[in-house]
Structures are given as C-alpha cells and as structure tokens.
Image (cartoon, rainbow, N blue to C red):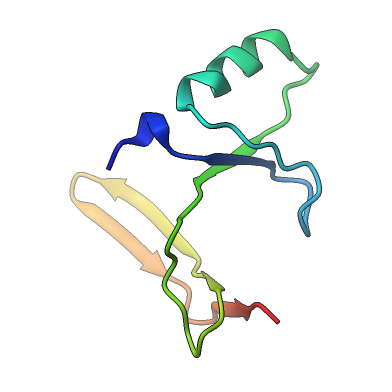
Length: 90
C-alpha cells in the first residue's frame, strides 16, 4: 500500500467527536504543517490512515478500544486490560 498517496487524519488527543481533525493527502504534508504551526507547549496528536474499504460489522463501521501496557521490549512483556469497548456507527 502506498502510504504517500493515502489520506491521513491527525486528531488532537484532548478533543473528541470529530473536533480538531485535519486531513492530509500526503504524509510529508504533516511534517510541513507541524513546522509552520508550533504550539507552546505542543499539543499531542494521534494520526490514523483513512481506509477506503473498512471492515464492517453488520454493515456498520466500528472501532475498538483495547488498553495495553508494555513494560519491557527485551523480553517483550505486554499486559492487556480485560475491559475494552467497541463503538458502532448509526
């Protein structure tokens, strides 16, 4: 898959429900935007790639939140929190 030609959606971590979302068509544009828009202190973002044909559940889009804690890389040690949740589109 060509990540350079994909659509990317950076979102501020402190926002929700679509607030603070930007759209970029090239991953390199995100670095350019960051260099021109320097916050004091910088706002953290999560960036996701838009999927043209997402996996559907019952014909609806969904997302899952699964919480994990990585305490070591050598050896790899990850703890999963049992209570995650899923959200489904209307």
